[in-house]
Length: 260
Length: 240
View 1 (cartoon, chains in turn blue, orange):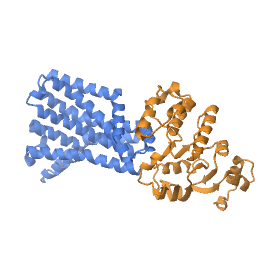
View 2 (cartoon, chains in turn red, brown):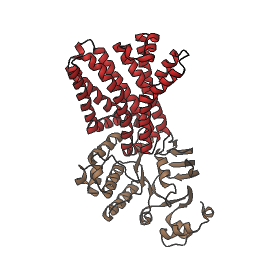
View 3 (cartoon, helix red, strand yellow):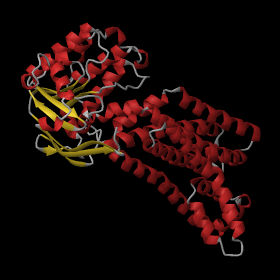
View 4 (cartoon, one colour):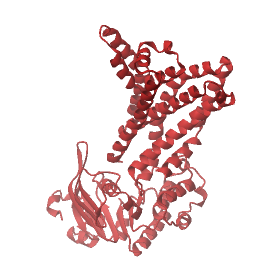
């Protein structure tokens, strides 16, 4: 597994796409710090960019990378390697290069501006962690979709739809449901509903940490009240870990039975 | 040495094999022949674990290879259509495969034979079809594996490379290896192989030596014998 991981990591980290991704986050973070002049505001502004962008880039990259590496996978499959190590190593290599580009690109400007010595060091670390989780979750989902779908266009389309669903449609549906059933107690329902959307979990996590519940809306307020800050954060963290793990289990299962 | 036992495989509605049984010995050159879409490549890919049978078992060295992977260190495989990462250079690809297999290899001689010296620093995406096939052959033959599986090895090769390939195959055979070969070039079969397995719609309709095929179908060469076999629509009767 490590050989494949190392190969795909090195292969990707040399590519101009990953380097531009790194550079993009560097410019955005540096720009935010420069214009806000304040680390706390910059962390909050960066949050929304990370929520949407990490998930979107993750989902696009997962599909593109799988389809582009089909040749490589076919070559490796005839070698004495376990199937699960091939696919998990390949996925982790891709994920690691995306995550490294994100962490270096975002982290460097904040480090240079002394985030470690500020009061927001822990919020910033949490923000990075969320970016890492979202990248891993969405790249794994799209890798799995590509593995299942031979048709590139269908695979890519479905991946983008999944992102759109979690980033936009899901919240809309939740809002409609909450309005429609407003006569009923909806606390538990909205809590559970949030757990099924990694972007929502991430948003709530960071808002709980930054303690700006006013921005959380109804569900965030319920979440904060119901769990209390630390329990809420631990449960959300646990859910994000589950979200990262489940697609990998599916990748493994599907890889074992696929014909090439 | 290799045994396919009651193998069934279908892709969706298309059934490729239905209870196929086939035994292949320890050494020698065995050609797997058949018209397009008769299941040759699927058979080979099942041996390599790339296609997983729906039913049945595949035995190699008295052990089932389904769910195993370590046995593949004994097999060198030449895929029919070489799919290589386009951004890799030839020498990077060679060292990648060497690094994965961790076995002794002798690529230098093959690079000389196929005159690949000038292409080593080129990216695979920039090579011609014939050169890619030469790289493919180098990757396959550089390890000293007891089983060599060649799927259409002559694809895109120029006549000189083809002569070299024939010599290489004969040399490997003399080392006592088992070589499985699929090809549409009948002269290659006639010159090299000792046993032929002819597949038709997933069934083995002929299994025997070249001489046996020629006498059975009263032909002077294999090409004519196979044409007679195919024209004789009643293939069930000649199933062996």
